[in-house]
Amino acid sequence: MEKLLLIAALACQPGERTLDLAGKVPRGLKHMDVVVSVEPYYTRLYLYPLGYPDQFQQCCSGKPTSVLTVPIGNGQFCVRQSQPQMKWHVRLILRPDVEM
Image (spheres, rainbow, N blue to C red):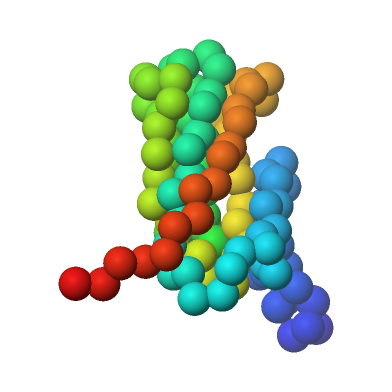
């Protein structure tokens, strides 16, 4: 029963999509920029690390395009959209972290 609960906690909520970047992101990166375009412009897209729905980042609020800076963590994310028929497109910008 505990294994079943663990699997349920590490899955996206029903109706959300899983974005799995594990193994596709270069090692050593801590953050990435996510460029999100939505249509229609008033819709919103939510992105959060897999298993942590309370750490979501919201995008676009009245703008057709927005940029989110997201910690990479284990490279697995969930995507939730505000409208069922909305269209969205995501591009990732992977740059080395700069420390000062």
